[in-house]
Length: 486
Image (tube, helix red, strand yellow):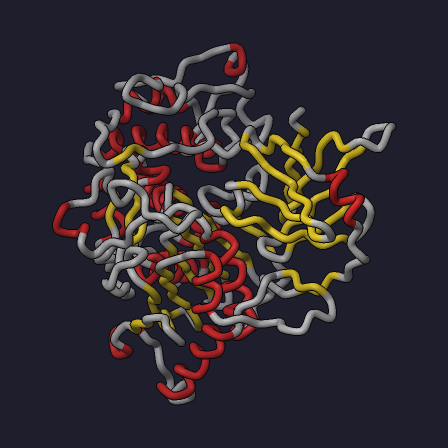
């Protein structure tokens, strides 16, 4: 790759080669992935359709990318690109550690379900019957229905606290009980039931903190020790650990977190005492082993962590688009299981398929990673003939500078600022929820625009006097409303 460091794992250790897959042909396949990036949506008749990984890393100001690809049920290759910190000289390798963010959740869920199979936890029934040192307070929402482990794993227990903010390295972190009750120095609200259990799907990192306590009490072990014994040791995940503060001897082997503006996070990265929800440090090579174990267990070929029936349960939707830990989708000939993760300055995406033995993990050390993921996975999907991450073309109509000026303004999206900027005939969308950079919008109709990176559609809403009152942001199957700030 031009002007971009690339380090491959020892092929003897990490690449599953057959007589039909020589080193030369594998290197050519990797080269096509590195040079075949594309936004999931492209403007019809646009001249250039693919880009290189090096180009897009520079564009998004992402210092480091680490990738592992699973094919035919084995890790086919793992490579890392860039440097651990912007302006630095230390190259990343497939051994470099990254924070996995919310990918911590399905990994934790595997261990929780292992405890269920051991009879130490129960999937159903009131979680308070399985807790000793702390209890989830009852209220008007739990009058008739109680939160269960099954629904905590599925995000349908009616529990609040979407995610966690992390703590600077210089700051004291709260205990797990402080997190659950929202007591200082915790910077998140108390974990409580705010909707009738099983009435609605609502993503809840707070629910996974309850699960963490359940696992600690049921196993009578610390959470890091439990995860090491239950998952990391059996799967030979030698570069994975749950830790609120990364041990000093490992810090030199870790990527540094970077914000969307390209600057490193003060103190290198944040701490996350909410271990089950956000406290995993790992590598794509290690996380690829999770993909493979889930694939084999689902097929009845392995039971290192879960039995085949329990794995099938894990990969079956309960409410929303999730099973018990993973996002899952039933496709024509396979089931996809996935999860993304984000801490302050890191992004991760894990994606796998049952039946076909395919998958990939990508980790980056930048808040701008989400858009880059789409482009990397589009290239992987094209090379390995995946049924998802297909590139589509969209036609546009001529831009209108007068209309753009009417649409421009300040908005509130998920309680965060979002801005629509007009620069003549070009309209831009900007929100730190998606990208630190202004995102160009392309006109489909008077009120409907799309972006190519990331793949979103914005549909403006007008009042009876044709004034913009807000917009709906469409991404995947989800719609997020935004209101204009007066």
